[in-house]
Image 1: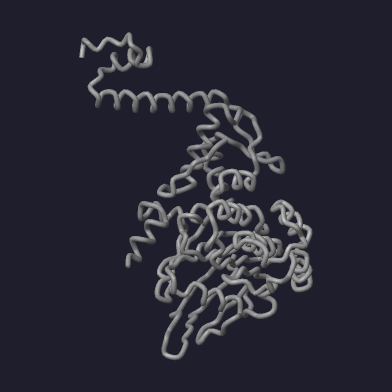
Image 2 (image 1 turned 30 degrees about the horizontal axis):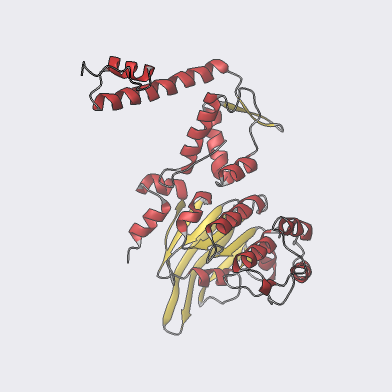
Length: 231
Length: 127
């Protein structure tokens, strides 16, 4: 079943074309990697899907309907940079999420946070960057969503934290939901991906099953990516 | 059970191979219930769909079967598992002999070498 569809999406800032005629169809029940170099247009595409930017041309639909309030309910989005007020305590953030999202499972979030040995009264700004990333991931993954969109969830954290993040993604996405992970740290995530999308200079250059790509091209997704986009 | 993967080879093929080895060795015993897809995904840190695909392959090979509602089980056909075990043993032995041949050992010498695990008794005078 198609969960999300981008039809002829373009995004321009003045003369500068960030995304050029993107056509994408994302199925349900898959973990999909959105892979591209810095500046390829990954975050712009993700912001368009989350209705935070308006496309210059084209249309995006989620479950057959144009994006809007409904799609914000069905998509759980982890932005690259946090929108949370870092003076908030963990407890306050949980209440904030409960208020905002009717599909937020507070108990689940509390359980996952307890496993992190966190004091609920601790303020976000007192935590390490890795811990802040974990807390935000827990919040996002505790929503019962149709699609999870994670923008660079592994950026700037140590390998042990990366493992925690990947495990949390694997064990917590809702049954039948899809996960879209944007990253340039391909070798760290490729094992959990069903499908990969390569994006370069604002265009989708490939969308394929990860195992089929490995078989066809020979080598890891990381290697194939490096070969295709050598600078 | 430990799982190690090489990103260069399709993950599901590696998962099939590793699960086969666990079945053949008896680490997953005949008739034993397999962990659920989600549990296996967690254990192996691979995508649940990939786990599903690998289990489908093992089912096609007749090494596991599904009991609706109850989950997946290792086949009780111990003859089949034993036959597969012999096949694996044959492949590994052939590899060993081929490797030893490259080093200039005859098949007989390779067997003798293996018998005393390269101990001091090994007679190299005939080489």
